[in-house]
Image: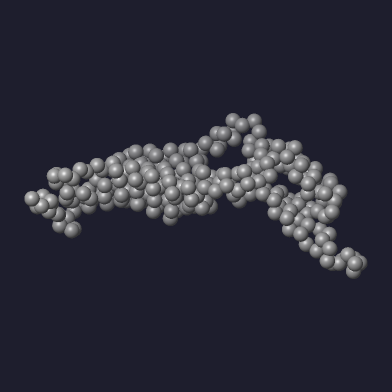
Length: 256
């Protein structure tokens, strides 16, 4: 007997075969919750923002809907075993590729870990909504905002020396005085880790022609991470001979 004789294929637009009002509502909830998470990441100017998180959440919910309702036509066919959890397991494995693409290492600093974890959480939220567990999806979304927005405030209050990094130290100085090496040594002694160094050298055409074209002045940007304030570091550098200017600002990158 052929397998086709056991299959009762429902009409293409049958709303009672897993594509009715309930499923559209579940997809809508996944859309809303994943958009909230993505909007928070977008406002923080992270590499994965509103669109990425929304697509991950809705896509995960749709996979769950297909896993639960998409194979009803072959249910009960001899020799065909259905396991709806298989699709869910593949979603969890597949989302790791997106998360891995968001994590990168620069020097000895790891970036994108929090955003990758958020993608993973958004996938779980979408799966919960698609699996008919929207309350769990809402709870997980609330947990996201609690962890990402609330925990940094708590850790800053608990820490004796709050982490101020990353910051950028901009320095202009006279060359051929060994200042750059001394500045790097000072930053290390003050407890800061130098994650990036960018030197911008420029020629000074003033003075005698024999000196023209030689590098007289240079600028350097140091990316620093560490505990405590970097303002004392700036104050000390302003008194160094050969240092022409010092600036400090928050670094646009972060470990999230």
